[in-house]
View 1 (tube, rainbow, N blue to C red):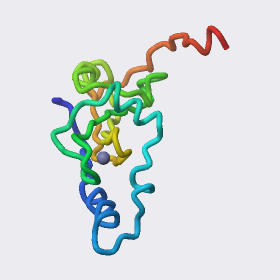
View 2: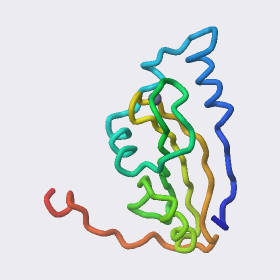
View 3: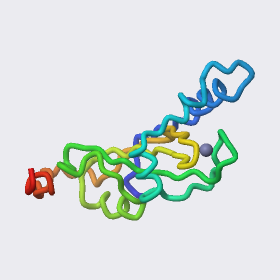
View 4: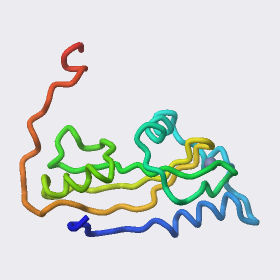
Length: 139
Ligand SMILES: [Zn+2]
C-alpha cells in the first residue's frame, strides 16, 4: 500500500488489556474482554482475513482481521469492511480515508483494535453519488 501514512500501532494497549485479563492481577473478566458483538463475529466469519496470530485468550485458533474504512470522501461506503485487496484499489480512487484494523476471535469473542492508518492519493474528491439501498426501496 504505497500511500500508507499516519500509522498507529495499538500493540501496547493490547498488551495492557491482555495483562489485566491473564496476568497476576486479574482485574478484567474474560466476559468483558471477549465481548464481540454477534454482528462483529458474523462479519469476522464472512469477511475476516486469517491472521498468523493465534488467539491470545483461549485455545481457540487463529485470529481474523477486519479492515473498517472511514472518511468523508467515501460517502455512504464509510464504515464498511473492505478486504486488503480492495484497499489496494481504493487508495488510487480516493484522496483520503482511514483504515481501522480489528482482530477478532470468532470462537471466544476476543476483539481488539490493532492498528489504524490513512490511505489515499491525496487528491480531494467529492463522495461518490449515493446509491439506493434496500432500505430506500422497501422502506
Ligand atoms: Zn479466542
